[in-house]
Image (tube, rainbow over all chains, first blue to last red; front, side, top):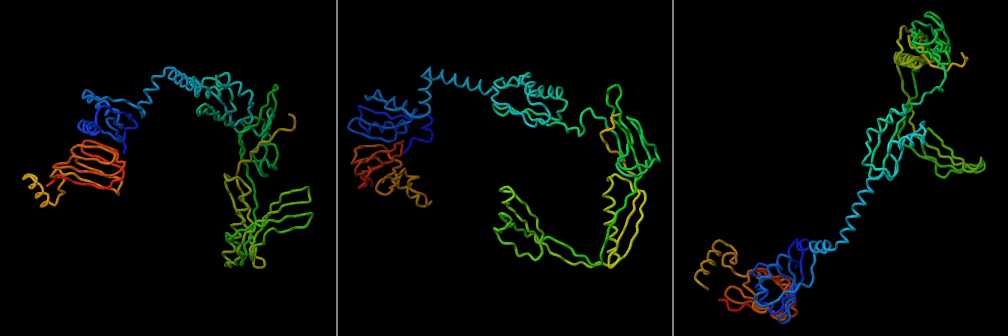
Length: 381
Length: 93
């Protein structure tokens, strides 16, 4: 039996009591309220274990003519006492902690993420100048200040964040969306659609048309130019009236295709033009197939993977009114798909024909929309 | 048994309480032949590997066996391990 829950923590001793009978010793210990365990006795010698506090109390019995000898000390408190007595060990431990503290404050690794257009070497050199370098003191760095400096030094940066995790510093950069036009190019504004110019406002550039002018797609509306060696790109707003045609049809009886959700892959190996199916074709009555091919050896060996998706073909009957409405809706969708979503529909005309169980609808839309499309000036002006 | 003790025993019987609670009686718990737990003893009279005599109120408890060892002793509790052959109670009314 152990001597209490915390004997291991607060210390326990193995000791020997000499010059007294074991019964007398145990009775004395019990009287003092000392917990004693693992007692072994031989003549006037008693081996026992007790806790640290108990040993001190047992010393009160010594004047009765017996002696106590501590044979072994166990527990954390004794271990600490021993360690504290070893000055060089303590000094070494202190130096170790100091070294650990110092080394953990250094930057051991720097990772830069997200650089695309920016020059990595230039970026690295710049942050090194700000103190963010390998083996630099991480604790002295002000990340907010470095981030602000980076925004000023590299205007291409849209967002930057510096994070420290232990001894590693990560610089995350997001660059601004790249300009689709080459630098130094003069930009013109050209017509996006065929139509008639209804309104225009020129901010920069030379207007090439006036309201009322009929233009074709690609015609220059506002021209950019070069003045004193500096490029002036066209800028402004041009609204135009466009005419769009859309067609659609609706049958009185239509086959409707729906996916059942059943899918299967079939692998096929092609060797010198001969195909070998590695798995069975699924027993679907109706299906759609999509195929992917990987070339394994020149143009001799291929690996094909076919994706079979089962479909159900249902026949739907529409009333003449429903079929007509279907054709109209499809024609409108086709027409609307040709202009910007913001286009304002001014007028709509439609033409409906019925031929062999099908309604054919033709819609003519008159809409007002932005005609602006930017294009690089290739005329050399 | 003294008059006071008899009274305590009667009260314990009437209230259906364990007698050792009121009458300061000892209690022995034997686990197999190898472990004996004694509560409310009054001290050790003799301790030898084959014989342990314990003082209890009004008498003695004598434990005989082989390789008897006191594994734990405290104010009124004791735990003995070893091969226990007999346990005798002497001197009680």
